[in-house]
Image (cartoon, rainbow, N blue to C red; front, side, top):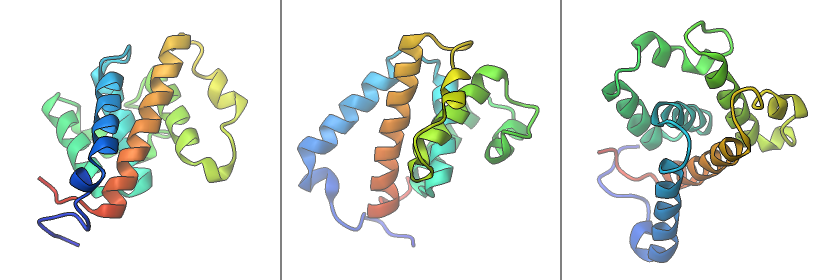
Length: 148
């Protein structure tokens, strides 16, 4: 579905909540995680959730940052791809586990995989990043803001 406006003008009708979510996003971007890793996590979660708006935004940001095209192309199959390092794999595994909560709480193994790559602050920042992109995905997939 292509449109020049969202299903409802949520940025206006829910302005306070929108501004708060935007502020939370800015805090996540200012936290301890490097921008490239955040963008990979945001893109992968957006792929899982089927949010075209967010997929476009984060894939564009990764391309502008110079990500290798083959890495971007294989993100949905990061488990099998040789283009992701262990830190990225731990982050992507955690992001998927937190996004797919209907499958149950994330496993202890997924959590334990973070320890060699993230301190407690990093784990908190990563978890907040996943929570924020999931919120944006619900708005993007549900209310269909137009692609830029």
